[in-house]
Image 1 (tube, helix red, strand yellow):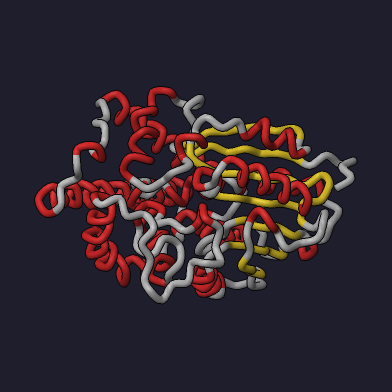
Image 2: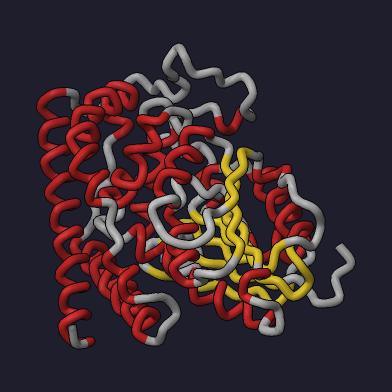
Amino acid sequence: MSDTLTKLAYQTFQQGKAAFALAHKNTGSQLRNLINPPINQLRAKSLSPEILQLLWQKFEQILETDWQDAERGVYPKSLLFDNPWEDFLRYYPEICLDLLNIWERVNQNKYQEFSPEIDIENYPNYYRRNFHYQTDGYLSDTSANLYDLQVELLFNGGADPMRRRVLAPLKEGLKAFDTVPAQQIKVLDVACGTGRTLRMIRAMLPKASLFGTDLSPAYLRKANQLLSEIPGELPQLMQAKAEELPYRDNYFHGITCVFLFHELPPSIRQRIIEQCFRVIQPGGVFVICDSIQAIDFPQFMPMMENFPAIFHEPYYRHYITDDLVERLTQAGFEAITTQNHFMSKYWIAHKPEDATV
C-alpha cells in the first residue's frame, strides 16, 4: 500500500473511532438523563463552539504528528492500526451495562466501593479509590478488561496517539547509549497498567529488555496476556509501588510513565520522580506523559474543571497547577523540556552523565 493510501486509511480509522466515541457519549448522556440524571452540583460546564473547534484542531494535529513519526521510522506504521478488536467486541457491551453502576456511584459519591472479595488493606490510601467511579477501581480483572476501551472512548480515539508521543523522545534519548548493544538496553514503564505503552515500546525497540511495574495484580495479569501475544522477549512485570521501585541504582537506560501523575498526591509525585532518578543510569532519559495543565491552554480550563467534577479525580486540581519541571530539577534531572499534544503534556528529562546516584 502506498504511503498516501496508508495515511488515508489511518485518518479514516481514527476518524471512525472518534465518531463512534462521540456517538457513545451522546447516547450515554441521553440515557443517563432519563434513567439516573446527575444531581445539580455534578453537572458539567457546557463547552463553547470555539473550545470544541480548538479541541478538534488539536486532535487533527496529533494525528498528523503520529503519522509523521511513523513515516520517519520512529516506530512501524503497523502500530498506527494496532487496536484491541477482540476486547472491543467482547467487552463493549459490558462497558455499556456498567454505566448504570457508575452513574449510581457518581450520584451517591461512592468512590471507595469495592467488591467483597477484593482486599484493599495492603494498598496505599491514595489508591483505595474508584478512580473515574469505575467498578472496583483498578483492583479487579473486570476493571482491567474494560480500562483501555474506556480511555479510548473518553478521548474520542486519541488515547493511543497520546501514548505514542513518548516514543520519539524515548528513542532520541536512548541515542546516548548507541555503543550499548540493543539487547542490553533496559527500559522501564512505571505504572504500566494493561501494558499498552510497553506494547508500543516493544514495536519500536524489538530487541530491548523491557520492564513494567504496577500496583494492580489484575492489570498486570492483563498486561501479561496482551504482551504475550506479540513477538519478542516478554517484558518483566512486577507488582510494586512507583514510589518504592524494587530496582538497584543506575539500572535503566530509559523510563516512561503515562497517565499516572494526575492521580497522585503531591508528595508521592515527588517521591516517584526521585525513585526514577535513582534507578536510571547517568545519561538516561525519563519521559512523563499526563494531562495538560492550566498553564498550557487556559481556554481549556472548562474541560479541566469538568474532569474532577464528573469523575472521581481527587488530586487533579492540584496537578494542573503543579510545577513538575521544578520537581524534576529538585530530584537532579537536567535538560528538561516539555511538549503538548492534544489533551496531554510531556516532560522529557535527563539524568546528568556525572550524577553520583
